[in-house]
Length: 256
Length: 245
Ligand SMILES: Nc1ncnc2c1ncn2[C@@H]1O[C@H](COP(=O)(O)OP(=O)(O)O)[C@@H](O)[C@H]1O
Ligand SMILES: [Mg+2]
Image (cartoon, rainbow over all chains, first blue to last red; front, side, top):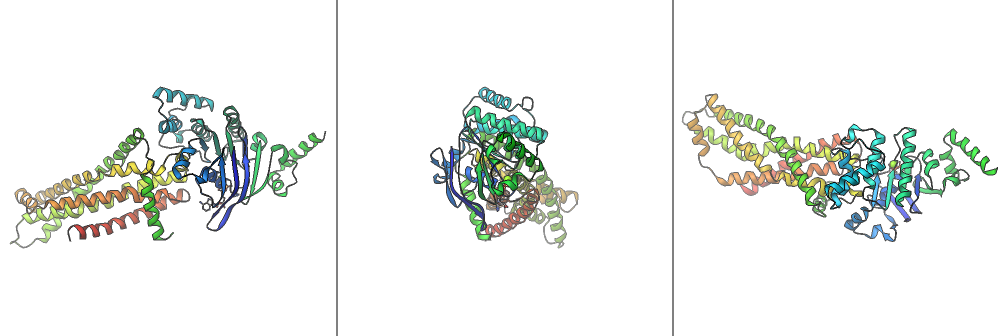
């Protein structure tokens, strides 16, 4: 469980996150949605401690992140995995070396044990024949899978994904979304996912936090998002004609 | 940001670099890779430049020594002094800022813009230690490269003297052995070591704190080249004044 209280961050006097209070439960896929520039990435990076907010509290299962020293923060981060928007794979390393990197850095596993662990997570993300390829030699969808494998290789308690399906075709995007949800449930992780994709919301939106210009404008579940009368949410969701139709079907079904 | 703020941040970066070291098994590999990348792969260009610069220094000196009363050994002497005191340590270092420095800025800078540095930090790795410390250690070997540069430079001078017909071997060799001051070599090595530390860290600073995208990586490499050269030139002046003045 991650609790956020009164989080505030500004850059050069311009507020990017305004007094955000919310919480994220374990074993659930928590979505942070909002337009480009609404502050999703800054929010995620603040939670991890890559960006230091001016005000607010971030509590990881009872541990206050911002009260920790820089080195203690780094210790806590070993329990976190992150999938970056552009995958952020180390381009000087092969797929196998990328996934094995956290093991290499932080464990005393033998060569064989490392190999087994790498094989098992790569299998978990359905990548079986790319061990020796470099990031520049694989597709965007495969890069995302490698990034997920690298993020979960140390069995994290918290998983953060910044737009995990941006730049992917719709089918691959849904596969990646489902993969993240399965992993979340299987390992009972607290997962946070940034997205501006309504398909993701429909697929895996167990809890949704809607950011608008740095403010928490609405929160709820994917069932609630279609019936809320919140104007800002409406503008975001029904920017697409398709979802206007989905909404009417949804409400109809509900009333029946 | 003001100059002062940048200098402060650079200092903090250097201190942070020594904290929470990467485990030795990993660090050892990184250092070896950097020695290969920064030192060995630069030897070719260093040797090439040193040889021809040494030759040019000799020709210039010879052409300026027109008086028949001056011994030809002066050509060897002047070549040795210029190569050891300035051309090997300083000129080579400026070339290295262009080669090694821009490589460091752009490789670290592109890791910044593609969030690879954030990825290291999320995993709990001290990215400054992981990325910059091995470069600093590798650059401790830089004085060896400068020693090679000195030899090759003087050899280039000798070649120019003999094959250009400016001085016979015996006189040239007598010249390079004349009034040899060991401290001049020490001075050159101290200089190269200081330059090496700057070349390892200042371009890294420019890459590490880069903001923006691919375009900024290119710009940062240029800015880094200019600032690192300026700093080397100023340090060269200060060290010369302190050690020889
Ligand atoms: N390091 C930074 N310096 C200044 N402004 C920033 C920085 N990072 C983000 N911003 C600004 O914060 C706002 C939110 O950005 P971001 O969190 O990346 O949006 P999103 O991820 O929702 O698309 C944007 O207006 C962006 O320009
Ligand atoms: Mg973003």
